[in-house]
Image (cartoon, rainbow, N blue to C red; front, top):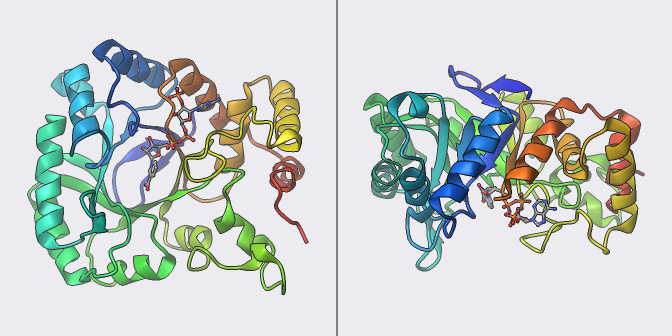
Length: 311
Ligand SMILES: NC(=O)c1ccc[n+]([C@@H]2O[C@H](COP(=O)([O-])OP(=O)(O)OC[C@H]3O[C@@H](n4cnc5c(N)ncnc54)[C@H](OP(=O)(O)O)[C@@H]3O)[C@@H](O)[C@H]2O)c1
């Protein structure tokens, strides 16, 4: 498993991390087996959010109750969680009060004294960056949060926060898979009239912005065809893509899921993949993708096979 440092911090992270959005109904044994498999594959970084689960902090609590981490086991794990979504509405809330209250709820549910990385989950149109800065300062100084980042943010939204927040923004977690790659595809067909792919959906240049500012690009839903529409792996809707994935999987002696991971990690910068599968064997197979370095020809072949244009 390749590793990277979250810029401006001493946090070392694997390229592939374990998302825990889907564990609400898993038993203690299932959660433990999932984590054990991940750890064996070099994944010591988990991704949570206050809103994951059937109730607020549900998945965080399920994780903590199942794992019963000892202090040394806790130290060996990097725990990332998110705040800023209010499910009842829904709406987004980056107020000082909401951020602080959410972190306290996460600390309690996770049964820990610190969150390693806190992400602002989805951009709040009513954000007051000074308030965010005040919340971050207080949480950081109290040792409750070690590092901060964002999710689903445009470059300008990140810059607005960076102008006010004193801590580095270490990550921007965005939806990214071979079949859902507008933030990569737009730049490949920049400025082409009549080409849908040229339309900027991401505020323009999230990938380059992350590289310029040493922000880790974390890819969520790495195997989903669209927005929770089912996986593209093995799907009849993507025959050409799956044929290419299967051929490369055989060539590199890995499972097809590893090729889907390798396509993402091949994107330069501090690129991470956030797995969502709760099937241990899939976690192990996906982790192997970190060791596969696709050639340019292979990477672009998958990109074209997913339906994107290379002009
Ligand atoms: N920041 C954000 O806004 C945001 C949004 C969504 C998610 N996330 C994070 O990203 C993580 C990943 O998201 P995701 O769960 O949508 O991503 P994903 O890994 O692309 O999808 C996993 C889901 O696909 C299912 N699946 C079916 N066939 C599969 C196959 N062949 N290979 C792999 N999975 C297969 C899995 O089922 P099984 O569990 O039965 O294997 C699971 O339900 C989440 O856990 C969360 O931490 C962040």
